[in-house]
Image (cartoon, rainbow, N blue to C red; front, side, top):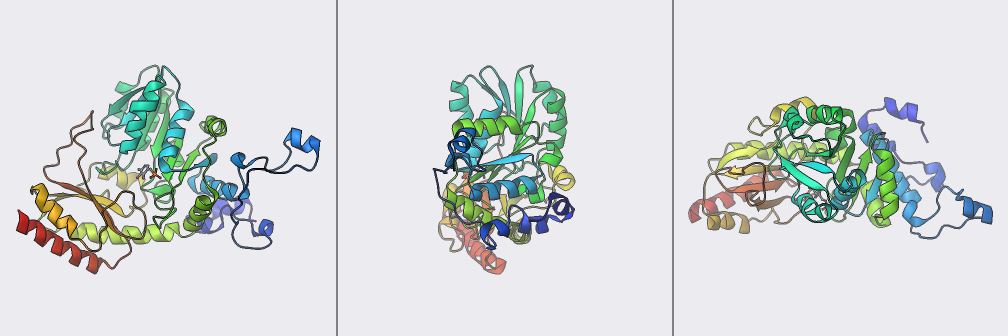
Length: 393
Ligand SMILES: *Cc1c(COP(=O)(O)O)cnc(C)c1O
């Protein structure tokens, strides 16, 4: 195993290959295998009662979970990480670790919708008040911070609507007022947005997306800086939302190629987004690398790349025409989640649930996940889709 000083000099993709891996502990095998286990035996009564072993019980970690946690902590530039069974569980654990009855939570209006549901149900029942804010508020968040504001929750880009937030600006203001900043960093991953370097205290990654990379697992990762880590670890240990060993193994395997897949997803998505921008049926492209995306200037300043997910707003068309377009697509599946090898599309409408900002883009909104198909084939499929759309208008 290399030491930390070596690794800190390496580029990200070198660390991606080496982090959390010690073949000398696995009889020379390159990868840490799947350890399944609840019970861990202690050699003596003294060891059992003193919990002297490196591992003590399945819920407290195994060599498999430790391998991914260590790797993620290193790649994220965090003080520590925990693994949970889904991205949503990562969001809820992060929030639970910093909030208690009587606290006030500032939540971006562009947040992943199930996060909103958690705030309206569990957090509300536990006496936490959630207030939504305009994702583009930036340092203006200062005006909303109250003495009992404990967390400012950010997500960049916004789920579906793609606003890029001024996360460092928000973090500076929140920290000055004693609040913590949580960020859902699933879209960029630490490769394109190093969250803790940018002022985020707790970062969430739905490993379901780019770590998995194949639409075949569910996993959440939560990383924290020195300030937030003790409470996060304590809350994880108290609740024990343990990820399954197969999913952890697959996520670790996916992580070894994540940077390469992200770079390819970036190239593919930019190609498609430029193509959409030139189509007469498209009103607007919501891709963080495009000036037409709200917060594009923050993306340019703070991000190192863009991934494979973006949205487009169509020129006004009846719903049945949009359905005719989508229903006949051969290469774009319609379904939730993203980050796999295959292209996907979903129609969406944020208008019914946003509360701090209006969503009125002036046309049907579609979110695209671009996979690894040849983009000429994807464009041909969409051209036929646009022909069906026009025919049904
Ligand atoms: C998918 C997603 C999640 C939730 O991940 P699951 O593993 O599906 O629960 C959280 N945040 C964002 C931004 C996501 O896209």
